[in-house]
Length: 245
Picture 1 (tube, rainbow, N blue to C red):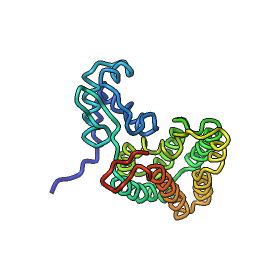
Picture 2: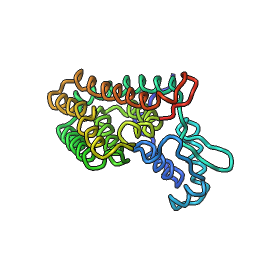
Picture 3: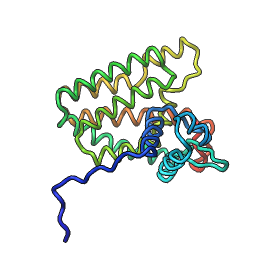
């Protein structure tokens, strides 16, 4: 039976393809890319100011995980998912992110809790000033990932990140897309479910209440998924159709 080395493995140097991969991941996680967004590899290379080779390598890695779809003629698309796939994704997010919130309530340092509280306040500010844009989507991601880092589990963090690569673009349809009249948009912003769930989370972290923190996160995910499904309902006939919010 092999022994586990006490010496941590040395990290290999980050290649240009690694950097492009990280940039594309951030674009997916923070809602800069939405389902049905389509871009050519050449346009992507120009946008990132790199050659085609690292873009191809980074896109291939994301396509292998299902986060991107490579089309003919060197085009890349953020894939749509079926209703059944979305339900499965939501359930896995509730399990993993709820556990991360539970651990964070137990393990987070005072400094980490202060960071999370500040990010929650920033998110609410952006809901007021930029509802219906990518800004609150990115702020929501920053808040959640600060929470999950505070759980102190790199393995759990990797799983959550993998799920968010598929969920990030879809979250746009909860807080990042709006075609409502201004007055109705402001009403929806002020009453948005995430405000109460994030406040519940912050109170739970300050009280070190692990179960309440997990409940706040899982309810945030559950209610968001219901709103997204409702938005898609008119275009869904059954679980074999693609999710078209």
